[in-house]
Every structure is written in structure tokens, then in C-alpha cells.
Amino acid sequence: TVSAPAIADTICNDSSVAPISNGIPTSSVNTDNWENVPEHYVPLIHQSAIYEGCRLNQPFRMKIWKKKLQPLAVGSDGWLTHMKEIYDHHSMLSKYEQDRIIAGIKWNTTPDQGEYRKNLCNIVMEVTDAHHNYELKLLEMSIEVTPEVAPVSEHLPKREYKKREKRRKEKAIAFAKKQREDNEILENLRSWVKTYEDVFIIEYYRDEIDLTYQSCAIMDDRPLKRRADDNGNLDTYYGYHKDKKICILSTSEDLEISSSIRTL
Image 1 (cartoon, rainbow, N blue to C red):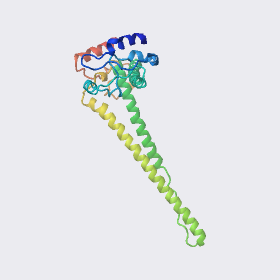
Image 2: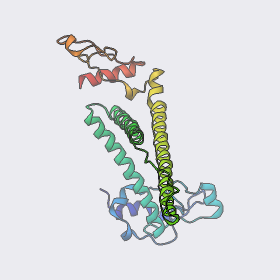
Image 3: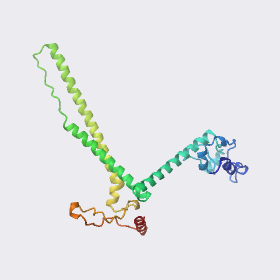
Image 4: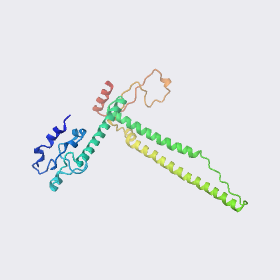
């Protein structure tokens, strides 16, 4: 681990403070304050200067030269805000890569294949849950009993007639409102089913139908598994193993990957 003073010596020495040949300053005219720099920021500090703006909105060299922009001082509030953005992005990428490795270990394969299978399982579960929620609401609406709202007899006293008629209308209005709400919920659930189905088709099914397999989608060679197109009873094939249908390896690189997986 490199200490902050060592980084400071390489970044903020006299030669780095002075303007370079093209007139672009490499350090702030303000005094750097390394005491304010957290230790976990130190490995992520770049040799180039940091200017006002977010991580993806740093000024170009021409703009720096024309407007004579000065870089942020190390340890200043603006500099720390920028470094926090860099650190958060780095942490996100590190977590993503760690999740890929964990998925590969879980599926006993490479990180690429593990990530592919994990994402595929997630989208399949989302499609299944969306279908389940839609069908459950549809079943609930189909078995719901419509309340009978009998007409009020006109032979009742006028005051009693008005009270019963009011209750009858309130029940009818409440039931109609519930029907509208249920239909809106059902339509929303149906839209989620369509959305997840489209995502599944676009990201997975369409590619595999066209046989444009991604390298990470190549299945491991498992010769003891039955063929995917064999739907016979398992008892019929007891003790008899068929080769598993695997996708065609399109390149020599894919063949080498498959061979390496079998040897692991």
C-alpha cells in the first residue's frame, strides 16, 4: 500500500505544480491538504488533475487552456466529492465482478457462463411470477360473487323508501368502483406479463432460435444427461444413457473453452 505522502510527492511536487509546455496546469494553485484524504481514496487517485465537474464531465484540454481553468486542490470539498464518485463507481464494478465470480462458483463453471445462467434464471422467475400474479387475480375475479341489489318496493313509507334506495345505490356504486379497480389491477398485471415476456424473447429466446449463441451460453458437456428432445418416461430408459444435445461450437476458441471446462 502506497502512503498518502508518497503519492503527494509524485503528484504535487514542484515540477507538477508548474505549468507544462502546452500551458495546461497539472495542480491547483491552492494548497493541497492530504490530511483530509481518506485512505481508501489513495489507490484511486489519478496522476492527471481533477477539475470542477462530475467524473464523466471533465473539461477538455482546449477548454482548460482557453479558459485557464485551475484544478481542484487535493483534499478540498470539490476534490473529495469527485473522488467519492470515483470510489463509488470502483466499488460498483468490484461488486459486479465479485458477483460474476460467485455465480461461476455456484454453477461450477466460468464467470461468464455463471453470470449468463444467473441472469437467465432471474428473468425466468420474473416471467413466472408475473404470470402467477396475473392468473391469481383473474381467478379471484372469476369466483367473486356479484352482490344482489334488489329493487326497493314502492309501497314502503316515503321516508323508509328513500333510506333503502340510498343504501341500494351506495352498494351498486361501491361494487362498480371495485370492478373498475380490479380491471385496472388486472390490466397492470397483464402489462407486466407482456413486458417480462418481451425482455425474455429479446435477450435470450430470439438469439437461441437463430442459433447465434453467445460464448457464455454454450452448455457444459454432460454426456449422461438425456437428450432435450426425449420426452419418454424415465423408467423406460433406466440404466441407458443418451448423449445430451449441446449447441454447435462455432469457433475453435469455443471448442477450447468447452474442452477446458470438461477437464476442470
